[in-house]
Image 1 (cartoon, rainbow, N blue to C red):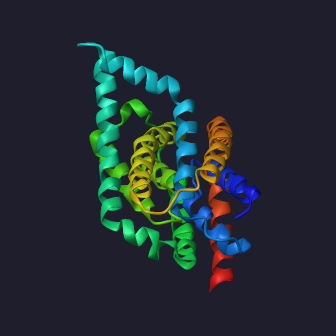
Image 2 (cartoon, rainbow, N blue to C red; image 1 turned 60 degrees about the vertical axis):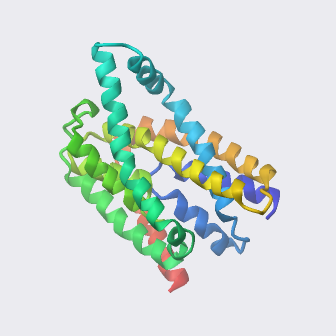
Image 3 (cartoon, helix red, strand yellow; image 1 turned 90 degrees about the horizontal axis):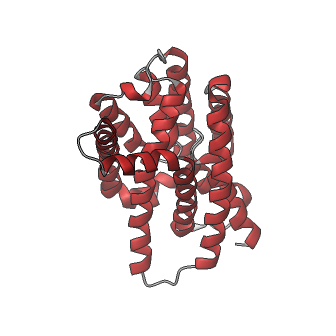
Length: 264
């Protein structure tokens, strides 16, 4: 692959990771659509590392507040921080289990374009229903353990490309009655341990492998993904109340229809 291809891969990852349109679907489909060599999981991991840096920087105040809270004793801040850490742990557990059980399938069968087309269309419809019919009358402080378990199970479904990790967690949160901003905010927080663990696991396998890693091109992908993701997160959060999920649903329906046309 050429230098510009790695930049484009990073940009695509950055634009799609936190928008509810499935980044993995776009990364897998680009080689099919443009005739490029498949970039492989190592560049996918690099792209996810870049987006991890972006979301951690965007949520740096939240992360700092949680870190400061857990260092305190017998205060409301400490209780809230430990509660949020518990939420993130419980919400991440299902995707860990599904990732361990289905890792080989993810790398092969789940990268099929027709499967991605079907999941893109199906979960677009679910997202529209959640945004249209969800009560949207609960803030993030109203989250319960039941809510987090349901959102975590939903996140595990995102192991199938085309589902969209951010999309399915926002869908679940909206169905549970969370406001749009609360659904988006918790989805972003929950993405941090999920992306971190997935990237660490795949990086370990790559380091233990016999093949030399293309660190230069992986760095290019990671950097372009980090910059683009931060910009995408900023404007997504800024305009979500005004736009709702409609534009993203419309895009996913168009993408799914195009993929069916291309690969049927």
